[in-house]
Length: 264
Image 1 (cartoon, rainbow, N blue to C red):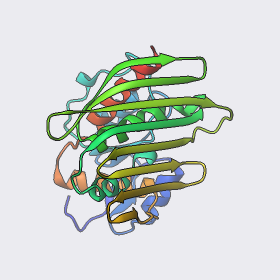
Image 2 (image 1 turned 180 degrees about the vertical axis):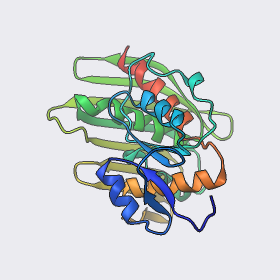
Image 3 (image 1 turned 120 degrees about the vertical axis):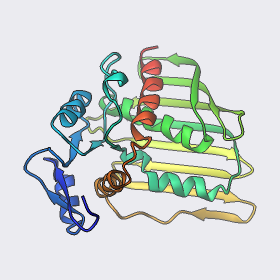
């Protein structure tokens, strides 16, 4: 497909219908999945939804805000990686992550802490994104060392690999709070010669990144593009580049950690 043609997008999600309308040159709604960017809702058994989209001839998949599936629900061997997958993670937006990482100017983190609070229905997804922030700021894979569980909370001690081959000690605490809305509060702190503080308050629509150095405190600019529109643009770019990308692999890594913590 040439770059001057609109990409077909197959979706029933209102946020993505709106995103297509905001991208009139590069995207257009499709009536079926074949040859289209298929938007798979992250609710329910989204893994089977992705497999169905691929079997139906989708050119690319956007996985919208996925929940944490039960252990054994995912078999990575079923996904050959022949079409790109973009994962929309509203609490782990790649543009916000890029701001946080770039502001550190290569300064390594010495310790990372993550705090999560959400209603029980959405706590797993929040923990998963917390692990994603931990991995992104450390620069390497995260390994669970030990954990403690109570009725309403989880605390985990972890080691995160850094870009220089070392490890960064990290902690994650998660608390279940009242309410039924799946959104929650995520706070991330990376300490070292440079201090990074990230606050994602989904109910309030807040995503704030502050970086403190010897020169002062820098607050990253706010991003006004919707998470769905960003994911759709990334999917179109990934399809044009004909590369599988790392979104799905990173999601499965973060989800494996989440399952290990929740099942402990």
